[in-house]
Amino acid sequence: MDIRQLRYFIAIVEERKISAAAERLHISQPPLSQHLKTMEDELGTKLVERTGRFLEVTEAGKSLYKYALQMTQLMEEARMEVKEVGNGVSGRLTIGINTFSVVGLPELLYQFHKKYPKVTYKIHQNESSHLCQLVRDRIVELAIIRLPLELDDFSAIHLHTEPFYFITSNKNEPLNHQIMLADIQNHPLILPSTEGLGVHYMILEAFSKAQLQPNIIAECSDISLLLDLVACNFGEAIVPETVLKQYKNYNIQASKIKDTELSASTGLIWLKNHYLSKTAQNFTNVLTEYLQQNTDLQC
Image (cartoon, rainbow, N blue to C red):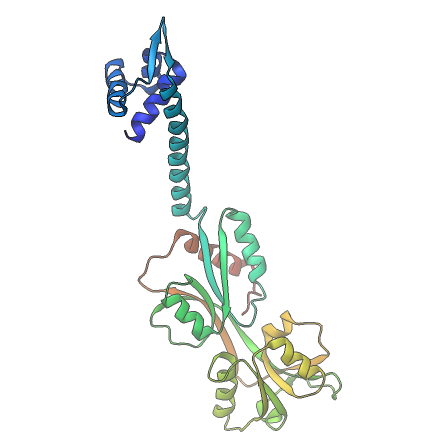
């Protein structure tokens, strides 16, 4: 038996006449009768019996009818789900974001969820270089990362470029609105992130280009702990603007670093020359629209 024969049998049971079932199915009576006989021969039992003008379903026929309804409904649900996934209406969005939280991402995901309420999500948070590897390994389709990184394997959309700030405790004297790296090279600095990666590398590279030697007393990859240390005057730090927007209730003061060498760009990446699901495509479209309307999607 195939799904078409099951649909034929459902019509026969519900119409109780071959002629009425044939009319409902838009086929002639002889082929429909032949399909019924083929099913009975295959199963080795009578499925319907004629009593007067109408057909009566046998016990075997009732059992088949129950399963036929379930199977045809499952087929229809499968067809609809596959179609929705293919169109990006349903499916799963797998995305990685940089360790420093994305200020505008919750609102962006909310807008995307309103438009595609059946989509589910898997969100990874990690350093940019690790996120690149997750994209290569197809663990996530998309990632929001900090640049610059080697992107030969990826397609990318630039999202934002942001400045860095020097932060210190409110217990200290007020800072100027802007400051140079040369003015803070002797301050006791706590570097965020992990050695060799992301923001850590950018800060050291900026000092190197300015031919300065920073006074590093600590490294801390936990940004909330780093801010606590700064607030209690354990040390001072250099952080991207995003951190100040994301963490507002700390007893710290900030001064924008004027050196042009120290700025951070962010981008959305996906694997080049590989299939990108319709869900991921829809997300990039919503992201592009969101960027046109907002300027605060920062990583």
